[in-house]
Image (cartoon, rainbow, N blue to C red; front, side):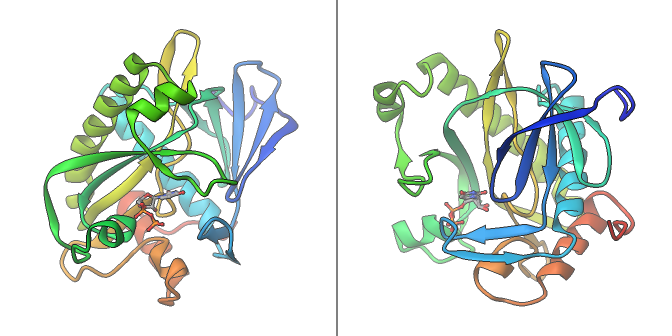
Length: 245
Ligand code: UDP
């Protein structure tokens, strides 16, 4: 698929970091990656210059890596520095989080220190709901709310752990520690696909040696050097430097 064969049509949805457009093809959408950043359920807002370009290309690289390993993703093609053609999914309203190292809300909930290793990766489910602030839920809540069938949730859990098993060593070879990350899955036809993005917005990535944060925590926690961290992830994952689009 090339930029010549997919043309954007009306805006379907504008989120915090991306805009989704319909296209001339009914089963294809375009994700447009913005530089806007939010945190803490949009209480904190800002701009990370160049973030959209980094997240578009880093996500494309991750999706291509996963496809090669047999994981079905919504990725179809990179159309430009900020635009990705994707299969149109009916998104399941669940955020699936995988954790290899204690950080963020897991540190708060358990009292364990950030950076403590987790022996066996863990999977958590959150209800994708802005008004509710994305609360953590379990499989009984998923069934009660009708968000997905038990078979779908089982599939998402297995896919999440498989994705972790592929991306963790892949990033480790690039001197990045995959601490935790968020995934979204959706339906297309009779199949499930990985959707959304895999980027420094949705993963915690630490330098493997120094444990320096190279992800959105630099923005969330006012650590400074936000743009440089995103550029560094681009350099290690995609290679080279992003254009200044
Ligand atoms: N995450 C995300 N979107 C969300 C919540 C979390 O992409 O709405 C990612 C986050 O970047 C981190 C992982 O999921 O890589 C785990 O986040 P956590 O539960 O620790 O919440 P946080 O501390 O980010 O609020």
